Each structure stands twice: as structure tokens, then as C-alpha cells.
Length: 196
Image (cartoon, rainbow, N blue to C red; front, side, top):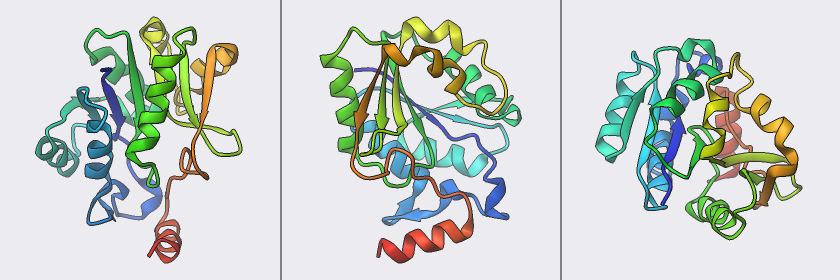
């Protein structure tokens, strides 16, 4: 099995004082839910957190995942990715999962993993919406690890993924779950209203 890296070092700046990864989803904090989903794949789970995020660290420890401290999280998602990927153990590939994708289910991660095992000729296997818009989770071949060292800014991995469209297999998941994140209290309220 491949390792799963959950990116959870963001500041939740648009949540006006609330931490979206601590929001309750189905009776558990969103971050704990994401770790549970990642654990269902059977491989090791690593969670990138900033040094000052004590509550997130506690959730990671209780869930049995491993904390990867990313002191350069204030540089944006690229800084977190660059630092966290460099800390992963040797592997053939790894799955990258955003900590705030509230609608993903374990079977979605399995679909992307199955695409990876059944289509080894690609370098990237990427979850997408039902309409085919690229999203998450994303599995990267270990051949791409050196490219993570060059990431900068808050574009995340798009600067890495964009030139490799021909080597990317999109895996369509139900509805918009591959891209649905909730960034503001209003987003959360609207989502809870429709997901009672």
C-alpha cells in the first residue's frame, strides 16, 4: 500500500476565528474523518500540520497517524507540500489528500487507488468531479518527488500537474466531492442545511 499525506497546515483564515478542520462532520472533527478515510486504504497516514496547531496535532495522535511538522506553512500550500513530501518514506507513489474536502468517502479514495494499480503507465492519478473537473485525492508517482522541491506560492501542486496532463489519469467521482471544500462559516451553514 502507498502512504497517504493529508495536508492540514492551512490557517482557516476565512473562517473568522474558527478552525474548519475541527468542525463536526458526522459526529467527529473533519480532520479525524479525513484520517479515518485515509486509514481505510491500509497504508501509513501522514498529516502535515504547522508547529502551532496543537489541537490538530492532538487529533492526529489520537487517530494513530503521524504528524509531519511543516514550519514553512505560512508560505502557502506549496510550502507545506514541499516540506511534507520531503519527509515521506521511500515509496513507489503516494496519495495527497486535502484536509478540508468534506464530501469525500472511503470508496472515493479506493477508486483513485484502483486506477493507480490498474494503470501503471501514468505519473498522476487524480480524482475529478462527475463532470471531469480535476480535484482530489491525487496519487503521484515517486518519480515526481524531486519536482515538489521546486514548488512555491499558494498554487499548490497545479504548477507541477499542469505540464503533465498527458501523464495524468482523471478518475471521475460522484457529484462535486472531489472539489467541495467549505471555507467560510456561511459555506458550512449552507452545507449543513442541505446535508441534514
